Amino acid sequence: MVLLRGVDEHGFRFFTNFDSAKGRDLAERPRAALVFHWPEQGRQVRVTGDVTRLDEHESLEYWRNRPRASQVSAWASRQSAPIADRAALEAAASDLETRFGDEPVPLPPFWGGYLVTPDAVEFWQHRDDRLHDRLRYQRAGVGWTRERLQP
Ligand SMILES: Cc1cc2nc3c(=O)[nH]c(=O)nc-3n(C[C@H](O)[C@H](O)[C@H](O)COP(=O)(O)O)c2cc1C
Image (tube, rainbow, N blue to C red):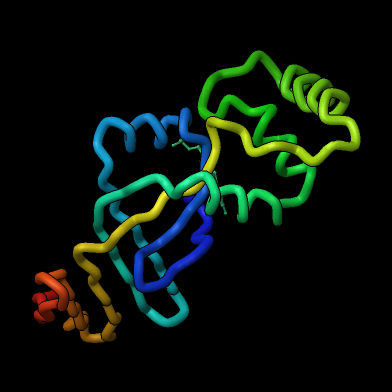
């Protein structure tokens, strides 16, 4: 799970560590599928698309609004790599706090945002009789096609 940090006409944005398992996967094959689920409403939205890194300027804009502790933690964590114990992680964070002192914490070169540009979006609506609604939009040139799928 990652937090959706922006959605507009260009696509869906999230932020993470580029060297994490998912970051390495994306470097190898820049495609992603997203799923949003609202159980109370019986709704699901699925998105597939190409993934690109946000430019540094955009990542920096988001980074600057993060709490300082989160910034230090991002520096301290080699996300998805094993570590001996919690104490080692806390020691790394504490060293970094000393290193940064009262200065603003810079954007790590290994951290930032991705944009998922959708080429298909499917809206699913639960129905008690299980004849659920599924509407799939697929990008076609400048517009979108829409079709109903069987549940
Ligand atoms: C509610 C929730 C929100 C999360 N948001 C993020 C996020 O925005 N970015 C991120 O890198 N990891 C986030 N995580 C942690 C990821 O689920 C995951 O553990 C981490 O990114 C490492 O994944 P990977 O090893 O597959 O790369 C979140 C976890 C939860 C439970």
